[in-house]
Length: 344
Image (cartoon, rainbow, N blue to C red; front, side, top):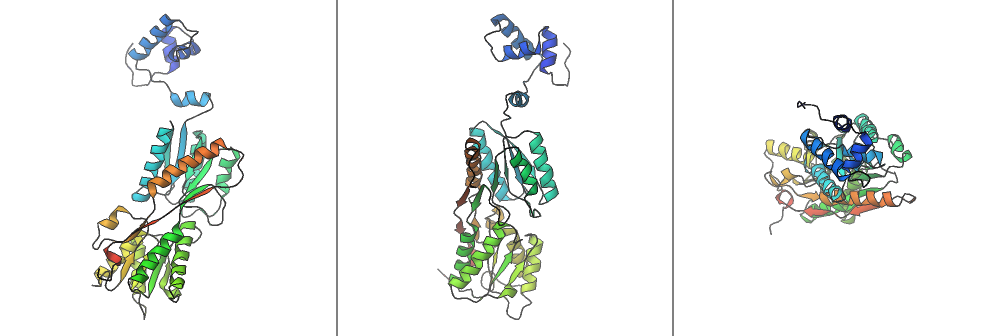
């Protein structure tokens, strides 16, 4: 048989052997109804034409795809990359393959991702919602199909869903309390979109830490950012420095934005942490590469991914469970030079 670039199908194999497709399938699956001689003949022919069985199609015929869908806002950066690593390791151990989609922080892409995964007949969907996602309607199709849906890291504020989350409130409280312990009294906050749980809880942790330590709230020191990028952080820091009483510290709900603040301070010749102390959130890899290195909150990324897969399995096994489950992981404050104003 002449070699072809086209991958031979089981139908092609059956034609070459003069057998039925079902007969070839049974032979390849070692069915007892097929003679040893026929099985040997089928296997030799399959090897000679480099036939590869379509496990996905076979799985779908049995009612199982062995596929788990994952949707993230973006893949660049440490956080979601490590979460995906945790998801893949846990899924692989259970014999599942993972399909990864990016929404690029766009709810329209997110809707398309959902449709793509439903067409692929995934057994479950794990998702961290896009920044522009404002309602739950496109997730209802997943629930209508009876497919387990697990959120991680980001959910819409006020929704009751199955999710694996970080205790963002505790991380923000710890970070702000640390800055106060270093002698900071006018602590600014870069706040993200408040319809997302992570940013709302980080802001509340900041506010409650100020109150717990007897510091007044200065609303002019809270900068609300639609996106938490380096450029936005640079502009926010520049804006804060024009105040009659500028801040002596910044707690940012994002590491990218706090690096922008660091760049703005460097350009103006201000010292970190002596003039302005800095702390971020997510413990991205670059926080250990800046000068000075940046204090940040670690989010237990790999554990979050693994926990999301475990929750998926629990939901699949307990389909009638009505109460949404939320697993909350503890944060870890990684203290570095950017926030340490007091000599040790």
